[in-house]
Length: 560
Image 1 (tube, helix red, strand yellow):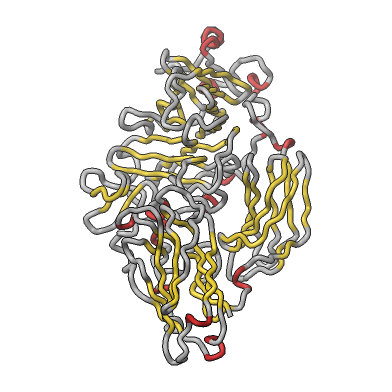
Image 2 (cartoon, rainbow, N blue to C red):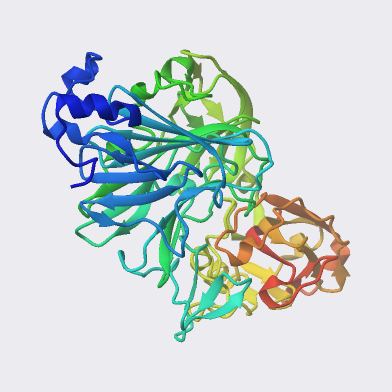
């Protein structure tokens, strides 16, 4: 029987204390170091020379490398889950040589991994099948902030849009997007969820499961609607991710400081307990551990709002808070718009009200430690849908959701066999206009989409404003329009993420509206004839196919 399993006598316990084996229960709580029962003796840690071996006193035993801080073993009920390709679970892509220390405080074992600007913390608690993790990053000396849990091949089903079969699937883009013989596409990017949409991600066999319960993402970048890697699997192994900064579809500068806890949790096949979700998690036990940068409940504040005026009942509303140090969000109640956001670090934040994913109201709000900031009803005053339009294609909600292929693009490549043709012109008033209009236009794929519409004599006798709302763009792609014989000027390039978001499951960038003032001379004078609006993508950059300059659309309308 291994050292961390055997029952310890008092003599053995005292001898083992130099390498950290410890008991739990009332004796430990009283500080005596004695075991209250034989079963409690299984909680503790040993040193096998290369790793700290931590037994939780439940069904989980983990190992942490003494030289790198990697988690080198996750054994649940005696079965090993950790590692693939000779690599282990760690922050970033592995820190390499690090200073690794361990200590026991009450019913918690805490490992500190220090390497340059990053400190990783790993904790296990007595009687739990969970591992608690924190990442503290001080600067940009590492390009990403993520924790990756690497899992052995074959322990979980290899299925879903974020899985692929390396032996038979064909690589179609950048070495990480694959196409199967049936034409479906697969990639680690295609988990299809925004941060606000999930509390946990993981794998299950039905009888055993491993979940990564995300943190509150207060030090992440991108807000509630950000999409990034969550998990992947292939025949070589599987992985779970906690992504805090990845330079993929990033719309904000990176934030620094302590982030967590995020939690690895084993179950017997079911979902993790909701008590582990960041909004419910009791972290009072963390306060005395000495984790650098940790701010407990007493050092945090709250914002509560009575409600929102001017809401559109068709949409969900979210209230976001952001500054250079932290970000938070809360869902607004349907009908009233009431909201509450707790656990916020002190500071002054920009409060943003989102209709869907479109910012429609902003203001400043200050949070104090231990305080609660109350806000009266906020009146939404910047919803572009309130403007009267002759016609409107889609609606202003910050997403391409009403348009063709939009939903598929959150978990598939645009070349996927399930995608409807990206070409096709639209007639306003013809029915199903938005569903016929492509969510994305690329210069090398479907440039020059046409919209046909008629005007009354009175409408044709006046100039009108044409608005084209976009959500994201690739390599400076932006719309240029022509109406009949009139051609607009080329707009300036928008500020958008530099990554290939449109092919990696995200339409989320910096929502921007391009405004074109169309003169009276542009319209057809014969009201029985259709006016023809042509949409082109322009850019000073070049690319090919779905990596040519492109943009995703939110809404297009012609104002009265």
